[in-house]
Length: 250
Image (cartoon, rainbow, N blue to C red; front, top):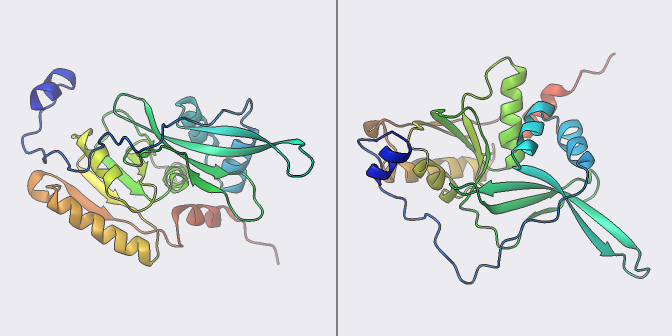
């Protein structure tokens, strides 16, 4: 592995942690993975992410251009009448080290009723969604959800900071597998910031992730720094939305 790194990346880590035991393995029982059909327009995507969730338009446009997010469409007959209807969702895509899509999560664009949230069939959640910074960044922040990762980048940009100074990944929950996968293929990343939700599950998850990282060799002794950050409210998008709300006049 070190020789391959030297030839392909030109970088050799003296004390690189061992290969994580939870790297993806072939699973014959996993359903074939196929991305949902793309919608011809992404109007609902931009309306929901930028107007409703207050995400930065330019950051969203970059992620769309990188095929990391897109709007899907599913056509189905209405019960009773058979009238053809459409359901539109936002798809957040996770790629492997070769740039192949391996996982995807769908989020409905409706702003009323129960929110539609579902993994695409056959997704391997070991591959995280990533809101990337500049090439060669040495820091990563890990979030529970994709929208939280983009919210964190948006907040940094609007406060005048360089939002491209780190990668931001979504774990799709609180599993450590996506983070270990990311770190294995980004050996130059030395600062790991855990940013799960500000609730009991998130606090417990941050502690568990930090403990697992230590066991895997991501320690100060090996040149790594692990930090923990919490949003002020429940999650990072709630913080962003609250910061964008203007006080009502008396």
